[in-house]
Image (cartoon, rainbow, N blue to C red; front, top):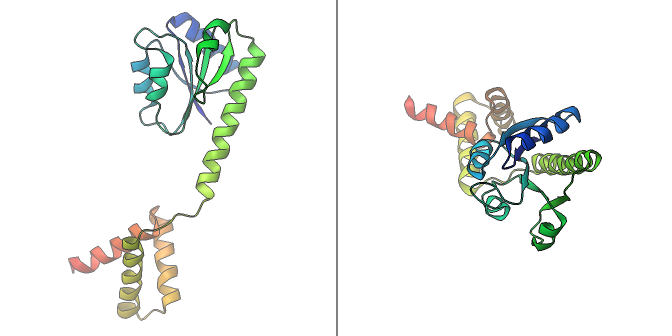
Amino acid sequence: MTNIIVVLPRLEDAKGIKNVLVRGGFKVTGICTTGAQAISQMDGLHGGIVICGYKLTDMVYSELQECLPPGFEMLLIASGHLLGQCGEGGIMCLTMPLKTGELLSTVGMMAESIERRRKRAKQEPKIRTAEEEEAVRKAKELLMDRNHMSEEEAHRYLQKCSMDSGTNLAETALMVLAIRHEK
């Protein structure tokens, strides 16, 4: 589920939007009144949506946008007059006064887009560096020499250990090589 952080200068407004979103089936990770609080809330999260007003107590929306970690998108809520002054910097905008349906559908669309990108990134094959390829090759050679395995058996063994330990193949190969140096 996509993380949502609501950042508005008035706490009551932020709570109101949070309640609308929660009733709409969304998970609101946090509500804040300052950009600094929002940045702190985003720390450690792997993407999501920041819903904010034009001007916060410590910064304006564009300063907060510059601080967004990768994987976060911004939904700006402001009057039509202020939205007309905003640049096109990849920010989704909604005009005040808010309509509940528009808010829910916009957040839903943004969340689906984030989830699609996340799934696509997981499906992309991971590219190993030359050092990682070398570690895998050396670990397979070690297993072939010491345990009399074929290359295919050594590779399958590394894959199984990788899956069992929750590490990638290169990390597993490095662990096998490290164990050899300990003996």
